[in-house]
Amino acid sequence: MKIEKLMESYKPLIAIPVIITLIAIVIIAFNGIDQGIELKGGTITTLNLEKPLDQSQLESMIEKGLNTTEVTVNSFNGTTATVTIGGATDVITFSNLMNGTATIESYSSIGPVLSAQALNQVYWALAIAFIFMSITVFIIFRNFVPSMAVILAALTDLIIAVGGMSLFGIPLTLASVGALLLLIGYSVDTDILLTTRVLKRREGTVTERAMGTMKTGFTMAAASIGSMVALYIVTVFFIPSAEVLSDIAAVLIIGLVADILATWLMNLGILRWYMESGGR
Image: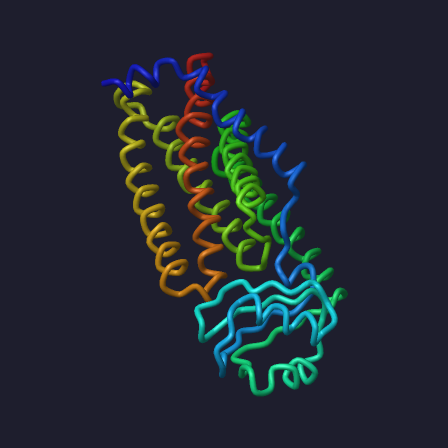
């Protein structure tokens, strides 16, 4: 009953996701976004330590051996460590440096040219996905306002997720880009569900149709967020070397929460405003 009363005052609620989106844009503008090794170039390696060594000793040893200050130990549990090194590093040089200290479990080094191409492809992938999504939405509804409401909700979801990445230092990698593409698909899915039921159906009032859709939408969101939180906790506390999975989970958690705001406050508000103005 309280939710139904709250939904009757839908116009001010539209401002909430809009304000959060503007804050996200400001955060992105000031903080920027960290880029992963695939996009900025560099070396990432996982080591199995053969002798006792703490994190700072390992980091100092690699810095001195490679004559660089761009060494970061991402994860360390006493026996294994994941290390990021700025710039491409010759594997033979690194193997000689680690000889007697650690064995190399995995090693990936990407040069600046390849990383620049990868970053360019990421921008194209996101742009093409968004353009084709927008075309599909317009074909489905053939109505400017509901179509734009769906597209704006997806864009809001995407911007808030990227803002969260900037705020929490989650790097933009090929994996996190995959998470952003998933968010576009998920956002459109919930927004099409809402728009179809509220706009196309005729039984009950708009509020009743929205409430029925909201139950389905919240169930989907709760299940998705719950599974991503579980994945994040498991990877952070039990599999710290699986940093890619924890980054994907974090991006999806932020985006799924943003989708709740964008769908049920902004998209629904725009739809109600449109229908009360005589649109069908």
